[in-house]
Image (cartoon, rainbow over all chains, first blue to last red; front, side, top):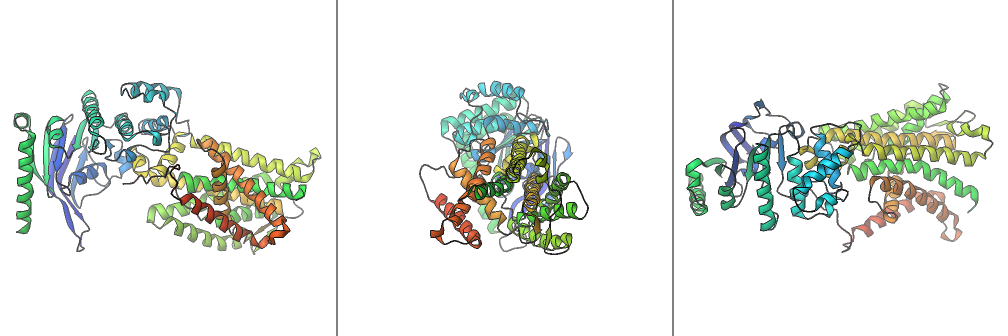
Length: 261
Length: 300
């Protein structure tokens, strides 16, 4: 479903600030797989999400989603295949629009409304039905501006909107990190439930070792632009957060030695 | 202030209501400070004056023909910004100075009188209304149609995409919206409205003039600021209404200020007064007031 081949990403190429964000990264994910992605700051986690979403282009290599080579496609074109929940709840939703209008924007990508009214009775009914599953009482606030909601509520909306199209790939960029732990856990759980129900292919970036093992079925650790660890199945089940942390520290120090070479 | 001055100020206020709705679309909805209007306002006037004066067009058709002319001007500005990443303000300045020459070409000189010909304001002649009152009605008709038209447009699928693209480009793109195309549509429409305003202005005062665009952008913005400061703006419907009311109030205030002899203001001081008014409102709004919710920057 997602296929990255020999990806190099170099920021500020040809300048003294040149930095290799990703080096020869290859990744294959079958349909329905849920990958958690960990790594230190600057290891390239967000770069991978940005590559798949299209906000940055690779210097080398190809990106394929759902069997189509999307390398070079702009963000809005990839939105047919790829949905995204941003780290900052403010980015995933539009604060100047009402809840209903936000869902209208999300519906527009599957069912373009053109010059017909963006909001109609069907959308109102369908949005209320989906919001009821959140149990946040948002179904009674359909005409409130999203800017009036809390970060957790906005992130939950963002998740519902991201999963309301036919896109089969879901990118989660630390969706819980800006929220308090309890709400964050609810958002992550909700993501897992929806992804399973719609058999979405998911990449979730996280800073939490525990979350990395608790959610999904495969874990990747990035270190200095390379995939340093790739575990799944029984090996992953046997791994604990402490082991991961240990590996993480070793890899980071290993990385600094290798870069000194 | 006499009743004639009051009607005169209201007429101009309604015309600038169109400009204000356009400024709302570019400055507020799309977050695109568009200076093209300094050129597209006289462009609409020039096109309409030529079509009526030299080609004998029906004044209504000639007035509507200003819209596509403004639309193209707006497209060019947005295209320079979207396609070539030229700063939006600079794109607008480039197009408006280009329009200065183009307008001179269209009119074949710095101005084009529209005297002794039929204009849209001649239409109510058979009802035997005082001409000032019928002009006011016709201008009101244009402004109301434009206001409701924009309200309806912004509620459509494309309209809501324009709003999302202006308010949160990252979210819009992630939802499959081509943000660049939305800027083209929005800035094009804003300039179409401005060009029609120019066309009406020329017919009201009996001439199109190359310099009539000076200060239009600031007057439009002043109207938006004044209207939104005094009226509630919880929906698009209320916001566009506030823009039209803002334009009327602004014009009436200017007329009033010029009428008070004690102030010693001349008609030529209007631009200075406008600039001071807009600057002081912006300064006032930028104060850190606890109650006022700051428009948080959504791009992290």
